Image 1 (cartoon, rainbow, N blue to C red):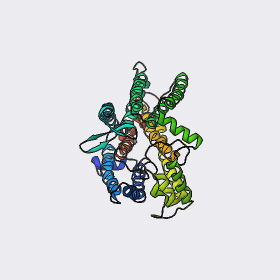
Image 2: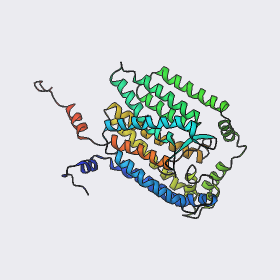
Image 3: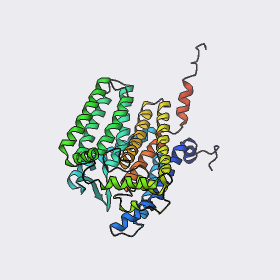
Image 4: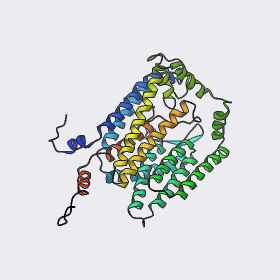
Length: 384
């Protein structure tokens, strides 16, 4: 335990960090590691690997991910902003590069090999995009003559175009929803709200007619016809799990669920640990988002407020999409469950998000001093 009397970077970090957030992030990662024992052996055996191949890789990804999260949590808001700009520049450049030399998987080019590692640049773009847009919105709010909102719109257009070119409709919808939420918090005029709504509806309609795989997934979701094996097996696993599950290692349906260790890990959790466990998992994500929004509501600095709200919204909406697909409430879409699913790029990127949240929600002495100064009577002025 670090004493309050101690001074130094570590002591200051320990007493200013939001330890509830930190514990929640590590706890969710622990749940993900536990579920990897249930979900990944069957997947590994199907493709000819030793049973605990993905479990070992999951553990290997967790170590640097936690290191990234803790390292970023030491940053000041200014350093968070600068780090996000750097990450955004690199990730956007890689998203352009991936269109030409990227690895094609299931009809999309989203992955690129670097130093023997397969990286998905769009995962790292997401938290950096949120922070940079928060800065642009905050600058416009502070000085209306600065066209921060216009720059944020242009940046959104660039990012959305690159995501659509891959194509990755799910990430496009997620990014649009988070960006729209931040723009709304920044005081978006009603005309922009209507235009964004019309543009979103038009974009979905265009995607239906332009991308055959999007039309196929929506048609299957609406009619229940065609190849619905993934969704059917996921639903069967949830039903078989009932309220309290079949017990650790006792799942049967999980053995035939495609991508059980990534996109459909929620269904595996339902089969082995039950609906009650899954409800508790949903409650954890809900508390995480609500606590972040509560921080944002109390925050006096516009940049911190927009960034924290955007980052927790991103994590929450991604969770909703993943769980909604598992419950057959949304069309099938490959998207990981934050901090739970297997995946190197996803796990490290989510920990970048978590690190930014921890850094921006720290209780800083300069913030407390600023708050006190709001109630201080200026020298020479009589108190009322």
